[in-house]
Length: 367
Image 1: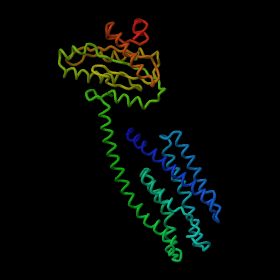
Image 2: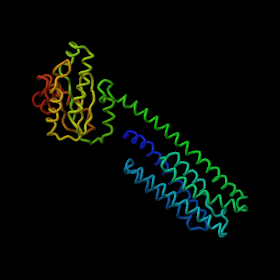
Image 3: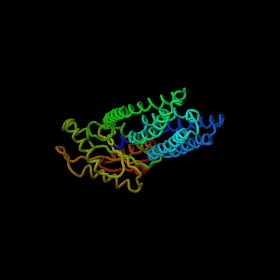
Image 4: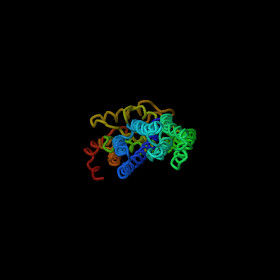
């Protein structure tokens, strides 16, 4: 569910950015035109500029934290559309009803923008906004259509026919978009589920169902580069002899149980992956440097405390890197690997910190 929401946000956020940019540019163009070619209404001189400013503020607000603010920005966008377009339309239609002016002469050339914005919202933004969009469209279109229907002298003009065909057929277009949007959304959701399933299969080790290297890399990419990490490399001791004595099928069973035990050893934020063969990697997030030795011992005891079915006791050598930032992950893996090498060279079934390995074996620092 979380991944589904993340994928939807990846689509929704850029779509909202584009919608805001289009609205800002259109409002700026209207501002320039209405000030160069002035109209009798002072509203035309500043309203498009205010709309551009409001959407620019929304753009900046979204830019600071898009994932958390996307819903608020969408709601605000809809509110601005309702509060600016509807009063504007009602103002000119009511004035025309009261014979203060001819609607076709005074209504600003914004009908195309209203239609475009409404269509884009329905196609690009969540289905839950449909009722809101339909309400906005109805409050814009119905007064215009009623006025034209009851004022044939205005209808039977080039601008009157233009408004009639803009607001009339567009209403049917919106009605057609609703089921289309639902079917597209349903189809996209199905595609998203299939992609998630394929991604999970591609990111996980087929035997042990923990991350593979690709999956761990994807997990790491979701962390901030300055996130504090420590790496544990865990290598099963004498695993080759297990395969030689009991067969590869039994060896596979050992790997599955081994991975299962690793999952239960540590319940704080971490990433677990099969690094290759009988070697596993655990990436601890935001660890305390003083606690790494005890964390390593917890993994070691969890691995070896109980015998394995048909095999007996299995042990592992564990190497632990120094605490560093996520952007230095490769260097941490190299440190943990050197610590594992030291553990295996000095008796196996033990936890070795990289700093201890360096202190006891100076030659390692030259590798």
